[in-house]
Length: 417
Ligand code: FAD
Ligand code: PYC
Image (cartoon, rainbow, N blue to C red; front, side, top):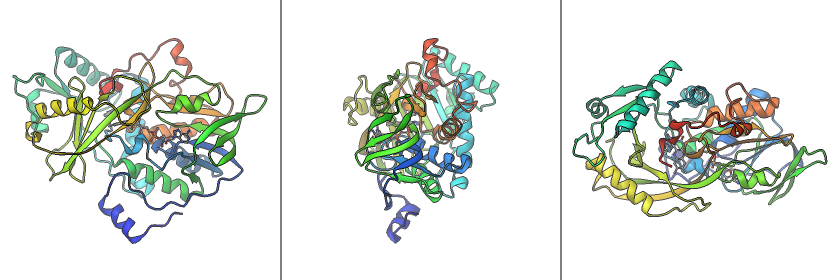
């Protein structure tokens, strides 16, 4: 178990800088594990938690080249929703939202899940048609979603400007009331603490540099910056860098990595009641419990592993925010940052066995994997423990790219690509 200082407990209770973490004693790696998870983001830590809790696998380790939750988990804008178009996606994301609803209780750790409603703005006739299609498809799948007129959208979110003279006027909106936000690093820490308590080794500052295979092709372990670590099974959850890690086993995946940027304002008193997204103007916004406006942009237009991204992207996003919410025009921005997301051609994830025996992969979440954290981890743990997919992730194979069956999950593009 990790220990907490009085100061760190106070910070846990009242919030702090998002990259803050309490002291964590990294254990010495054992020579061999039943399973090793590469990547200590929310998905990797959650996978370890469910492997231990639901499948009784305790001789396992999570290996992280940086620090817990320091990847996309600690860099995202925390929007949670399940208003996806396809039946397969609705099954996956709704599974996740249901787990979010009880996650704080499950982990005995406040992940600050706040179902304050996610509203997606329609600015064109095409937006209206697409969102109405989503509303109907979601309802048929038992997922809440409703259509609002522009006036109803303003009633739900009073700061919204619905003037018809806007460059992109608000013509209506789709609202998922159960959608919302959570505290990103709390999710990583909650899963980490839960996994640690069940005996999982969480090894930070340890980069995986190779994947070793036996003559029959099966995985035998990973080479790392701290030496070889044996493993009967290896699960890779290294968002943004999956292609690099999978290439170590000789596998090429249909993924591209892009910077995605976000920024926060100075903190102000509660002023913004929900989450608003607009794909057309490339902006989304909510207010954190610390009072900062959390604002995100579309992906940069080029592939890269640089976590900085181009400066014109947040500038463009702020233009859009000021137009939609004029009362924020004089706010000062505190900081901006980027993450690297990996995206499949059909914008849906891969959660699957691979052609290499004992090697499993969970990737391709693009701009939208935070919301999936508990659901993805839950079904990935099942896939690794039983060497077969859970029915919910069975459609999300590598092989599906041969037939294109899930092109194009439009709701995944809640962020402009
Ligand atoms: P990560 O948290 O990135 O974890 C992967 C880990 O693997 C990293 O810690 C990394 O250091 C580690 N790793 C990589 N290579 C190696 C190696 N060789 N050896 C060891 N470790 C390695 N999603 C939403 O649903 N809603 C949002 O509002 C949202 N907003 C976003 C905004 C931004 C700016 C960004 C960047 C992303 C956003 N996302 C959002 C996407 C979401 O953040 C990701 O899909 C999700 O967090 C992925 O989680 P993960 O655990 O798979 O990845
Ligand atoms: O998938 O909802 C989403 C999202 C919002 C911001 C980034 N991704």
